[in-house]
Image (cartoon, rainbow, N blue to C red; front, side):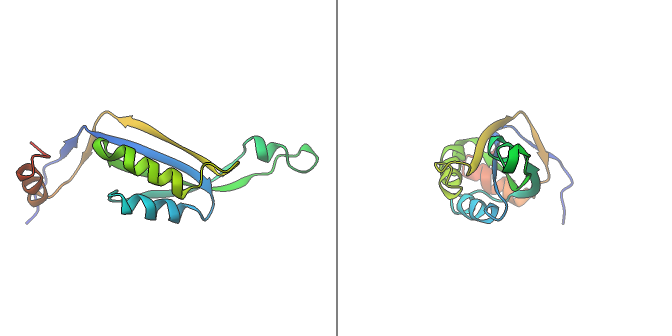
Length: 124
């Protein structure tokens, strides 16, 4: 039986990580190990400082993975740390990561899950 009620969440953040193509899977794996439920990976082309300094000053486009993760705000620090480590962001040119607040997120959540979260004091 399905419940068609829309649930609006307010304690959610968006963690975005931009890395070289092929490194997105490592970022997702690290985030999942820290409790992130899912991720969206987009392939993109980027032109940054390193790409502009290519051969003869001609811009070279670089393929990127853009990993987007919706995470409960009380888990954002542990997931963000794991993402930064997995992306090896301490290395020059490895990429970047940032956290954006989400004012409201509307989605379907099964009634059974909402009841379980309410029992745990995590939902009202």
